[in-house]
Amino acid sequence: MLAKEAEVHVNICDWDLKIHHFVWVYNTTYKSTTRYSPFHLTYGMEALLPIELEVMTLCTATTMRLPLDESQCHRLLQLNELDELWLKAYQSIEVAQA
Image (cartoon, rainbow, N blue to C red; front, side, top):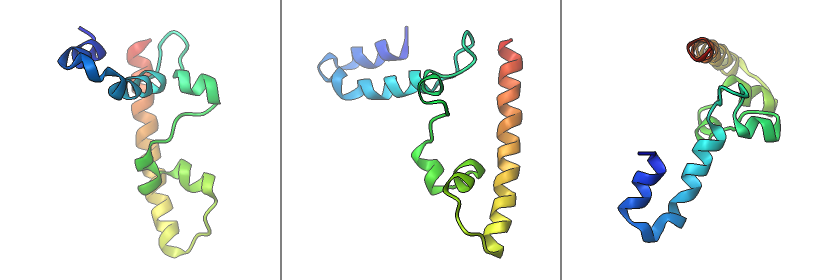
């Protein structure tokens, strides 16, 4: 049973309150046939989650072009390490699906 079916069958009257969660998940999930998410195909970039603005990733830090002091440079190095880990995880997903 699909996640959306399980969720809708719990209370069929409130499906319209929960459908946006499923649309977000579908649109931001990597598809093996196109090798991109539908969001990426539509907007030309991956979606940013709200948490990525609170806990900056290297991508959001460089996109926002913030001026850097010493502590921010240290944080940028940490973000770079996190992005490298993310890239390795992403590449292992691609290898597993290929």
